[in-house]
Image (cartoon, rainbow, N blue to C red; front, side, top):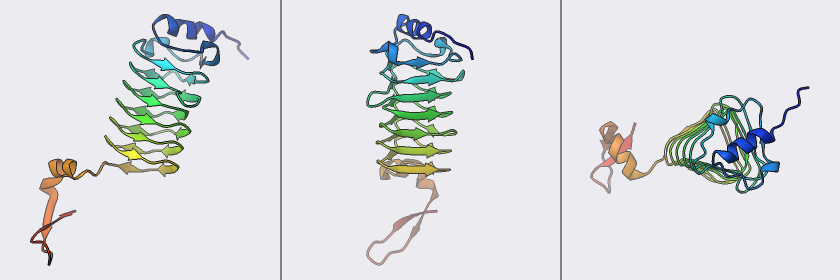
Length: 175
């Protein structure tokens, strides 16, 4: 078993500007490249563990605010908020967020401003921009898009067809 000093990586991250309020409680894996973690506004709270050579953390990201968080080989975009839990081999686009006790397994993509409350489990799931998941939910092999009438009207209008309805002259129907 190889013994190494993880505090060296934590100290390097602090030196480049990453805010780590309790550096002795944070574990940065040997394979993590500190150059792939931005020093601009990144906050890593107590109890967080970061592993994986493919891990990327961009500016303004906050990890583990509500509970400890493990990140393993994830690509985390700017201003992402992951409040606690476990994330592995997934991608988080700008301004996406997950509450505490998240369990985000491999193959997930959370696009811009997609978010979930506490205790959300995802596997092989893609959340389109602005999708919001409630608490205590588990999704696998799912593709989910936001369904705001304004948004749909903008991009889906060409694929609507109309049908007659007794009380309305025309009713849109999505195919």
